Length: 145
Image 1 (tube, rainbow, N blue to C red):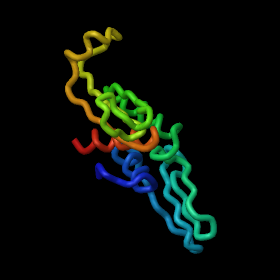
Image 2 (image 1 turned 90 degrees about the vertical axis):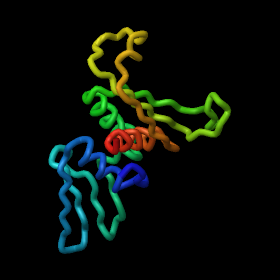
Image 3 (image 1 turned 30 degrees about the vertical axis):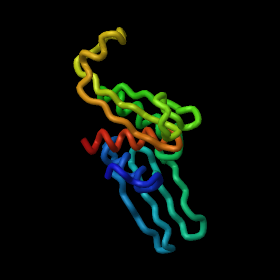
Image 4 (image 1 turned 180 degrees about the vertical axis):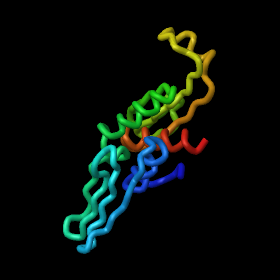
């Protein structure tokens, strides 16, 4: 589950495992597939004559990816997304274009960032060529651990 390719399967995992939505699939008599999420109306539609249409696709759409960030935040995660200039880490090593870092902070309600390290319980990273991909990979890493 942690190493899914960007696209429909990653989006489905995020919808089901993180957001808690039930994804339902129906196939019409014309061969069209519809994937429904009751809370979001339609998630994924595949029709033989038109290819794929994604309506909630957090692995490729930054607006939908921000739903993922908000869900993680509600769960107690501090999420930071960084764009790495030229794909180089501060150490000089190659890096993906985007890194999403999630830090779980337990029992900390203050905005005083100097105190945060005392409360950190765990942290994970997600990497990607786009910010939405990095955010979704972070979410999957959190779910896998």
